[in-house]
Amino acid sequence: SSIQRGYHERVVDHYNNPRNVGAFDKNDEDVGTGLVGAPACGDVMKLQIKVDEKTGQVTDACFKTFGCGSAIASSSLASEWIKGKKMEDAMTIKNSDIAKYLSLPPVKLHCSMLAEDAVKAAIKDYEAKRAKRNGKPKVQQ
Ligand code: FES
Ligand code: FES
Image 1: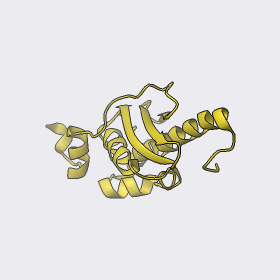
Image 2: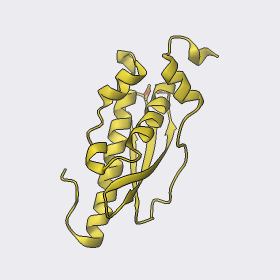
Image 3: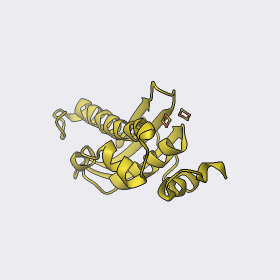
Image 4: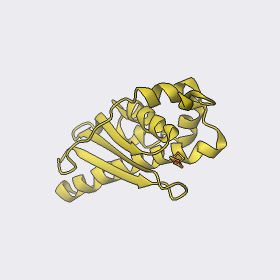
């Protein structure tokens, strides 16, 4: 198909077989939701995490992305990378790491930026909900 042409095989793999597509109930206590958009192209990414409150570990992640192949691949990869990580480690995932792993060309860097922003937004959302319930945030922002 036409998506194959010029795209790195890892992009094509994550585009054709995206991991963790789906949604959690955003009202659940253990869920954080990040919804971000790219002004450059109008694409939208929703990434959600489930967190073990005791350990601060991301136990599950899912996403829905309305966007290009690189954005879908970036969110799929990011959702894989953050699963099992502590929130503070998930916070350190850089769009440049995603772009490098997927060999994204410079014009597609903002697609991986969406994934970094979505991860951070999901963690912030979870922390805001948790802070509302019981005070002090676990991750400083
Ligand atoms: Fe075409 Fe993002 S600009 S999908
Ligand atoms: Fe805009 Fe990929 S997210 S072109």
